[in-house]
Image: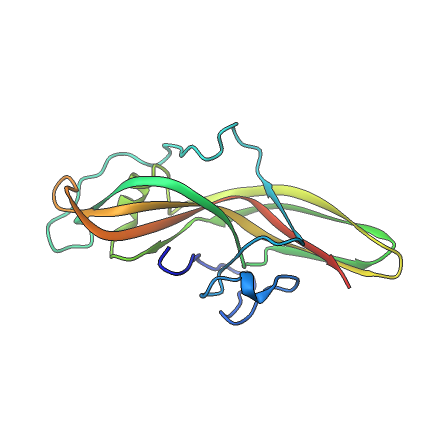
Length: 198
């Protein structure tokens, strides 16, 4: 995946490539510092969705025609498919407290989708190829409860969970010529809760 997964960071906390969110091993963070692999302290919770959450929707994905040759619009995206889920490093909420207690963190936020691309393709064509709008924001909503033992300090942090889709960029009218370049789109679908005691 071009050596890394990437995401657009919003108003939350972001991390340099050499750093990691608290409670997350640095070795699990992508090279650009924008994603991490869920570890033993991470509880991954998807939004309530249909049975096959990996099936792409067709929202905001009306057919579009490539632009003139030599422009960024002269590409189409083909073979789009789900490849993974990943946690973003944008901190969206946090709570902490001393035990004995139960920490409850409820998240109901709107998170923007984002894109990484190896070639200059207009986002409207990426949306058309993916089958969903890569320029929209999506609601993430879930809750976790974390028991903190007596005498311990507990922390719960919430990060966005993304479904990651990959597609191939094709050039020419009708997208007949493979370029060997790929694009990745990240759709917010839930919450990654990191929770630990110290």
